[in-house]
Image (cartoon, rainbow, N blue to C red):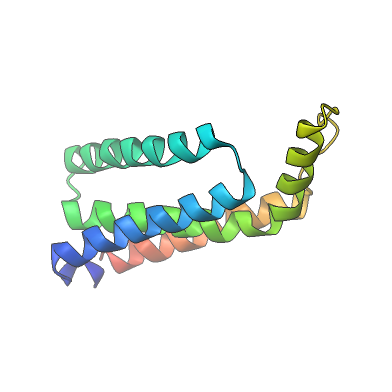
Amino acid sequence: MLTSVPIGWLWLLAAASTVLSSCVLGSMIPLRKFRIAYPVIMVSGGAVLIVVCRLNGIDLTGALVMYSCAHIGLALGILPQRKLFKEIHERWRRDEATDHLKAPRRHNIFLVVCFCVVGFAGFALTR
């Protein structure tokens, strides 16, 4: 379904989803190094994803849809942890210990479920 869309729109979807997840995580983790490194790492991972998909017989359109869906699922799934990231950052700036701060189990489950559901939806949209 989405693979029948012109390739230019899929590149735009991939770029928009990368920007979305970078902005969401960049607003939660206000470190300059992270804001620079995260998009670079994600785009590099996307390039590796495209190569692996091509080696397994999945065309470029399918790889771009899966890449976009992965970023959208990550951005949606990480939203409940905003307060935790903010608290960790504030304690880190005050040189307090942050080892005892952990994400609640329901937040981790929500992240995994969002990522998997959107990933499966992306897989279904490539068929």
